[in-house]
Amino acid sequence: MWYPTPLAKAVGVTHIFLLMLTIDVIVGPILCFFIYKEGKKSLKFDLTVIVLIQLFAFFYGFYSIAQGRPVYIAYVVDRFELVRNNDLIINKKDKVLPQYQQPSFLKPRFVAVELAKNINERNQDLFNEVLGGVSLAQQPKRYVDFGQAKAQILQKAQDLKLLNQFNNQLVGANILKQYPSANAWVPLKANAVDMVVLLNKKSGEVVKIVDLRPWK
Image (cartoon, rainbow, N blue to C red; front, side):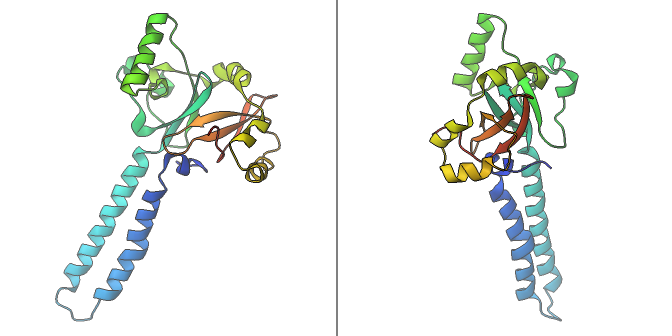
């Protein structure tokens, strides 16, 4: 629910899943097998230590997964940006629309980002992004309903054939044939692996996020 395919790869959370799996499902039982000996005086202590290690690994992993989960997929200018929960910058909550004041605990939501209306604000936004590393997509005070950006998204959407320049043609064809209603795409910028958002230009709807590269 938090990481619908292929967003786990896009945000690079797979190693945390593997860490939890290794410690809680593999290492813990193996250690129990080796230390267990009926009548052993320190058996309770040893088992307690193993359980605590497993609990620590679980809660660390769960916290990391919850904090790093994608909460918004925000459209900015000519691309989507994947925004994680710990990427959000909410410093003026009163300026955030009510529906965006609290990120969803369910799946990530599509939103659009409203650009500044005057040149001074736009220059400040550019300064913040270039020197401060703060993207507009990280600021919920700039969020508006996704539907407001559909016309711009369709105008900027690119032809599917262009994906052949950045991907293996056979792999790309096998993925695209699963989504016959898709006839255009827009890049998705993520912190680990950039991907592609497939669109239907007739309806203006998002079809699917797929594990293809949008650029070299």
